[in-house]
Picture 1: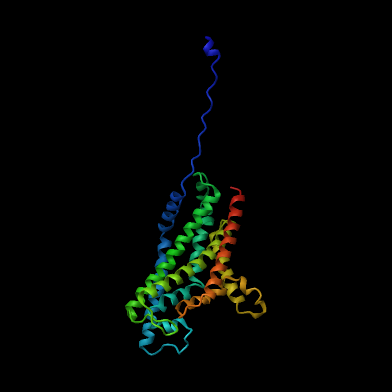
Picture 2: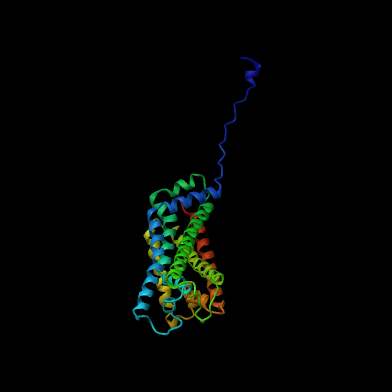
Length: 292
């Protein structure tokens, strides 16, 4: 045995570095997972049918003389002959139930659904930190919700133009708008409704992080929405009304007034932003402390 052999030290073990998966790559993978599900396409298709069915029904009712009275505040009444109001009326019809249901389903599948299927652990082994995992899931939910609202708005505009023509772009105040102004107001309406749904999605993510049962998330969110709507009609708890998310949902009709009131829309946007911050904070606190 030589001197060089005696002085030779054992080789240090090789340490495998854990590479961080880029957030953009995770986001693309999440979108592929969302939009490849058959139920996602079915839900989007059903939501797109809402303005079409509404427009056709209103056109038939108007032609048969079965239309409503002169309630200027009723979006459906004015939407019968107004290509501008039809998509906003469709959003107003679905903001209380269908859109919250769709958003809750997306949030439930994001965490609770994958936890139930056992695929959520695979994300953590990718490796993906839990905070980044929540960010990807929240971005996926937000993208899907935006897609649903924009799809309804676009289909509503096309349906309104086909049925009523381009000369029926007038506000609830009776003023006629240009096509560019109409698109601007529709963009405001779609963005505002999307923000409200993001608030519901954030709360649903918080619930989804606490359970492995997706249906429990959907039921909880819908129950909260229904209870909040009922509480808004009870004057005995009027002190609670400013804290309820549906408090400002009636302000959606302000988009088609001239001039457009912004107080109700601004209050609704601020309230939704608070819900988003609280919901995502609770979801982050839960997912970073949850075992497994």
